Length: 208
Image (cartoon, rainbow, N blue to C red):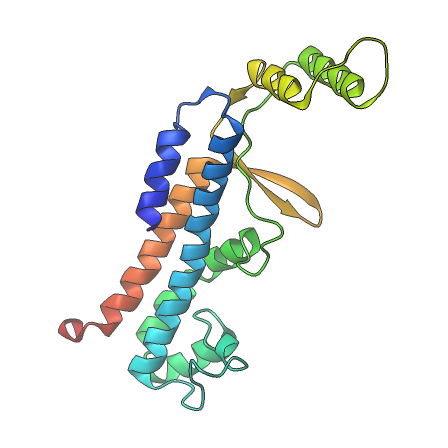
């Protein structure tokens, strides 16, 4: 599923850039990007449950108990303490990804649906064109002289003066941050696959 989302992203959002995205393309790209990150987080949760069942960690917790589920956290302190007692090598392997997981958690919290990652349709670097769009916006929402412009006309004009660049934006209390779309996504995908390899390798009887 992650691979399919990345393929759709690359079809819509070439790594070398393109003319600005149409609104429906930007919406689709945003959905695919968020799908990747939600599945990184979900996949890590699944790995934690696999370890729990394999090693009998936290025996009093089950997937049917909603209050206890947060304790089955692949990088949670209690979970790692329990794991260190039965599989110290696996625990050490996971510890090497702890900083990355903290960054991933801060970048995309699956419970924060109100602040998804966002792929902007295009970037405008010409200051004069920005002023032109502001003037058009004023004429669109006020009763100034002339007929003004419609929202679709304003959007079309904005698209003419912008160009897509492979970046995405994340919202945080301190403001917006801009990331390289493929630089960040490829990095996080590689790290996710490395974590999965460490965990699944430890669960494979052939490796023991």
